[in-house]
Image (tube, rainbow, N blue to C red; front, top):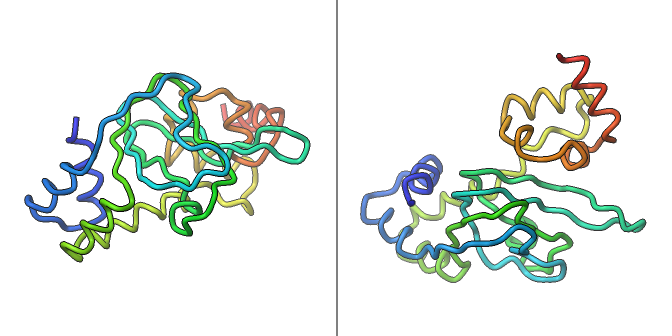
Length: 183
């Protein structure tokens, strides 16, 4: 159960066996059913969650009450609302289980404790940079889709086109044209 999370944290930080053990001991397994919320709009994100099974979608409602997908999470991803977690401010988004899912959760107070015990844990802050993998908004629709295919093709296989299109900042029709052109 913990092999993937160990592989992930050691890709961000050089940790001793003892430090890895301390990190894993702080994690709590949790199961969510499809539609369950990991984070509600207005709540402050107080933890990191490592996705071991299933998938999640982060979204908000715009002024016309349309759902706007801001992030899609698949297996071996860290599920975090970055701005809420780092700023300790209420989230503007919801994070919802797209299907039955299993996560390993570590709370902010446990993270702070680990950092106080060993500065090596501070390097795990790089996990918060996962948003930088989202295709750049200045890219063309085709470039965005190709970047997504290259960096996280599991999203294409897991989520409906309307969520992928919203995540990429385009209409479903534009995404369909891009996909036809690439095939």
